[in-house]
Length: 204
Image 1: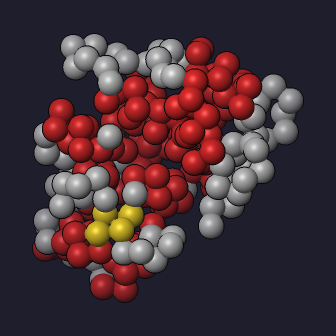
Image 2: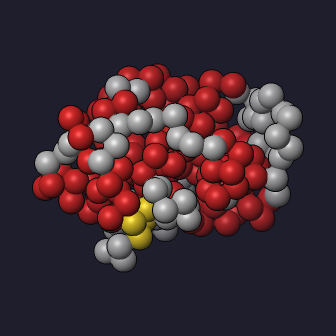
C-alpha cells in the first residue's frame, strides 16, 4: 500500500522533522473529528468499537472496502485482543482502511471518503511516513530514520539518544524494521492525542 501511495504522491512534502512537529496542532484538530466519529458509533458507550459498530461506521464514512478487509484490519489493530477497538486503535484502523481503499481507487477521484477533513489528515500522516521511509520500500529502517531525522536539515539535527528513542518507540518487536501500522501508533503518542482523552490504548 505504501509503495502505491509513494508512486502516486511522489516525494514527501516534509523537508525536516521540525516541519512535521510544527504540524502537530493541525494533526490534533483533525483527529478530534475522529473522536467525534468514535463516540457516535460506540453505541453502548463502553469506550470501544466492536465489529458491528465498525461496519456501520465504515459505511457511514463511505469507505468502499470489502467486509473481509474490515475484519482483517480489525484483527490487526485490536492489539490487546479484547475484541474491541479503542480510540487510538480506531484512528490507526481508519487510516489503514483509507490506504486500502486509496490503493484500489482511481486517481481522478477528488475525495475518496465522506470527509475531506479526515482525508487531508490521513494524507498528511502518510507524508510524514514517506519522509522517514528513505528506502522507499514501505518499511522504516533504523539507518533511514536516523538519516531522515539528521541529514535533511543539519541545523535541526536531533541528539543521537533522541533518535534512538524515537526508533525504539516504533520498533515494538525489535526487528529493526517498522511497518506503517507500528509507525501510526507511535506517531499518535508523539502528537499527544491522548492528553485530553480518558481513553488510552495499551499498545505493547
